[in-house]
Image (cartoon, rainbow, N blue to C red):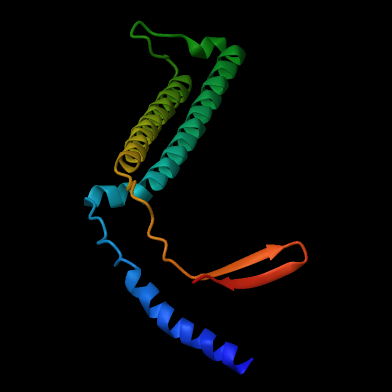
Length: 161
């Protein structure tokens, strides 16, 4: 038994350094342009920003719709106060103010939706950059002579020479 353990230790002492030398050094890391590194994580930031901008645009549009509905309700209740002038504006300042507020909120919604579309376009560009500049070389997986196994009724560790 002692002799078998000595032979195993001697075999490991001789084999392991040879296996370690057989491993090639890890390849030099591939240098990528700065915009590839930025696009790898920035695409998610741009996508989240786009979703946020679009959510704000929907909110502003809903506010504009509510303001316009209140103007319509006001004009149904007070049709005499909702008379239009020759220039297309309401003669009474109350419905005119509500209409101007509707236009203002709609314009804001348009700007927010434009910002959402621009950032969505930028996120798509970053996804393409990351897809096109991908490293297709195989990953460096270090060799190990040890292998764990599990079989029905057996669990163990195997050393391959």
